[in-house]
Length: 56
Image 1 (cartoon, one colour):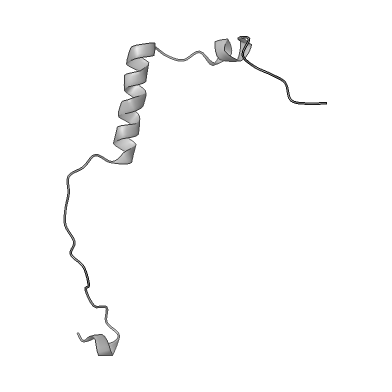
Image 2 (tube, rainbow, N blue to C red; image 1 turned 90 degrees about the vertical axis):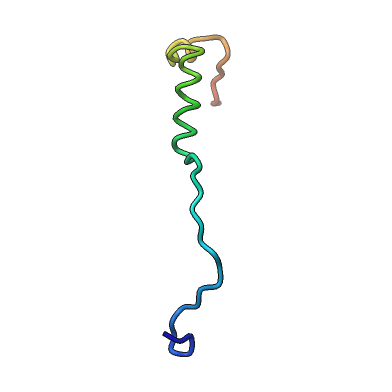
């Protein structure tokens, strides 16, 4: 296989690194927050005094 024939040419080095994925780090962060703070309360958040209405 020659580049003149239209085949790709390798120009870099591929390597394997064992690192956690974004997805696994995200889920670990959510679990950690739930362990510290407990489950969230959406109804309590919305009925609390820190909300506003947008309109005319």
